[in-house]
Length: 116
Image 1: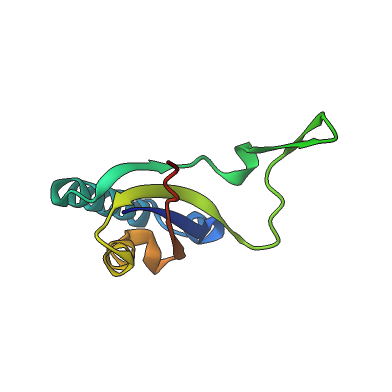
Image 2: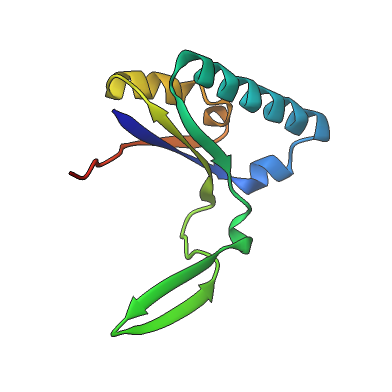
């Protein structure tokens, strides 16, 4: 089964880190991605630009509106994702727990709905 691991964290935590801490996090994250690829779990992983770079698109009554950024009532924002292949939810949870940013934020694990 495929699972989407959404990486949520407070960007203020990252902003407060030293350059060395950020570099270590980057290295650990890239190494974990490599480990997932080698184990056959990795499908794709991507980091996202900060929420301030986002736009939100809505279509209501046939009219499109575009606003700056997401409207979140939380300090945590979606910072990236890893799409994985796992044998079951427990396997996906184990993979998610190894994501280095799980120590700073939260990883939401959600099964992919397969159509057809």
